[in-house]
Structures are given as structure tokens and as C-alpha cells.
Image 1 (cartoon, rainbow, N blue to C red):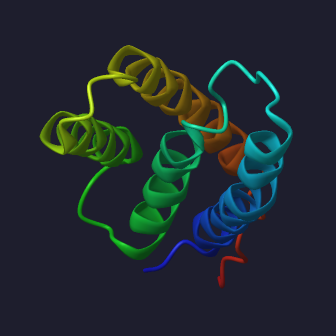
Image 2: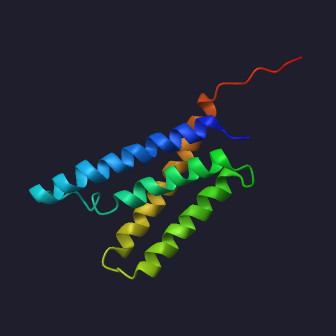
Length: 120
């Protein structure tokens, strides 16, 4: 059974992430604004909530916590395999912040969920 609230939330977060990558990062780089490396870590900030919500919404195999941990560890592994260690610590902090934010997003989605009707 697909969980529509999680799929919608994942799609919205993903669209916001894509828009931020298209608009925010080029603007910051063009105007040489010091943004504490937010522009360099956008993909890590938005990938975990987007992936976790979409994967959990589609699959019934894992709990939300397992999905978040799988995606977070996969992102860390991607960061290590990539070999760019110049921003390694900053990206790990972004992954940690994104993972914690994903749990808060999950709490908001579960509280805002509309109960389904039960046929008696």
C-alpha cells in the first residue's frame, strides 16, 4: 500500500531542492556571497528527506527509521567513494543535519495524516 502523504512530501521536498540548486547556488557563486557552504551541500541537505519519503511511501518493506539510515549511510558512502575530501567534514555535517531534519519531517507528516474511513 502506497502512503500518499509521504510521496507528496517527498516530491515537494525534491522540487524545492531542485529549485534551490538551479536558483540559489548559481546566484551565490555569481555574486561571490559567503553562505557557510550551504550552496555546496544542497544535494546532501535535500536528498535524504526526498529519498526517505519517496522510498517509504512506495515500499512497505522497511520502517521509516531503517529507510532513513539506509539512505544516510548510502550518502556517506557516496561521499567517500567520490574522493573529494576538501568538503568532506562539511558534507558529513550536512548529512547529519538532513538526517535529523528527516525525522522531524516524518513526525509532521504522521501528525498531519488524514485518517482513512473504516467500513463497518
